[in-house]
Length: 262
Image (tube, rainbow, N blue to C red; front, side):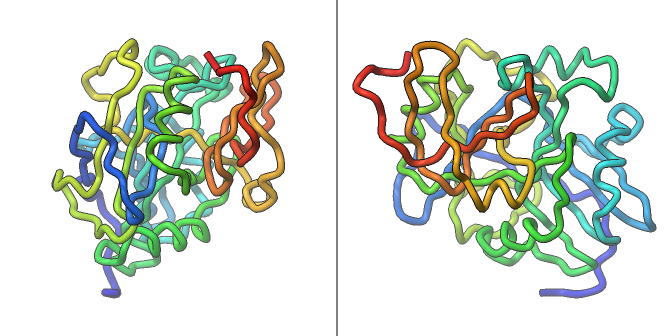
């Protein structure tokens, strides 16, 4: 791990669009949600937010920059910026047309490229995620993206059932290849009703977490507001934020009711 790297914008690693979600023991899965790819750079005591093309968005989302102020100097975080609607689902129109910090806008961090001047890009993704968990302080506008340990089939079932855009798959041992699209990260669109938009994120649209204590506990289950049925998804990582009451509920292993989840 190289030292003394100054924090700077780094071209994002891209996801390769694929029709079928890859399967295998080395693949990990995240939700593909509708938002902006965003990179947070902390240097000289100041946080700057960059778009996927390196455009400074700090003035547009100052509340997110303030929420990341606790990051150590010379640190670079990769993630996704989303706006949550009243049902807790990402809504790209809300993100484009938000009016204030009171909007349910959250930056979900999913990777860390530089930490305290140490270049982490050649570490495997699994190790970078572990370091990321120690660097992020979750708040109303910052979350840590967790990863499901479930199979591709289980992820697809959940995504289809809940109208989420798709699935992002990443190899756990992948290094961060800045600016490249090599296929060790992929994205698969499932619910085609959500159309792609210029400037939107590159497939890293995760909808997880707020506090480490809640993530460790992972005690609750996603519940549908109607019908009372529960959808079972493994622990370790998928989260849904309720925009109405601010609570975070994990999508944890539970039984699937006999009745299907529409």
